[in-house]
Length: 141
Image (cartoon, rainbow, N blue to C red):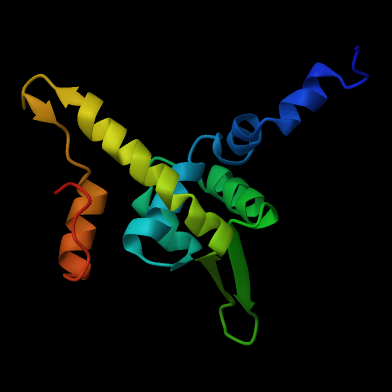
């Protein structure tokens, strides 16, 4: 039986392919990691400072895409001067924390530094979770 569906259309039915379309662009998962490790609400400049290698143009584009995909909410406080904009992770975005946790565990197992002779610690997740909130255990324990 022949199908009238193109290969490109079939790829859109693959959950892995569709997930990669949403989170596969550079910086998207690292932006989500910021919400996982540093808190649920962020302003643009906080994210820009914490991901020091990202350009403002790319961060703006990724945030817009993530809002459009329903991973983040964007709230504008237009009654304030200057106008304040905050981003909050959604339930859909929070679901991706499981993926980030799996990536963290894979990285702990397979990312080694020959000088340390062991897995590389995630400075962001371990330091921030330990110092900001003692009730959260470091994911590296």
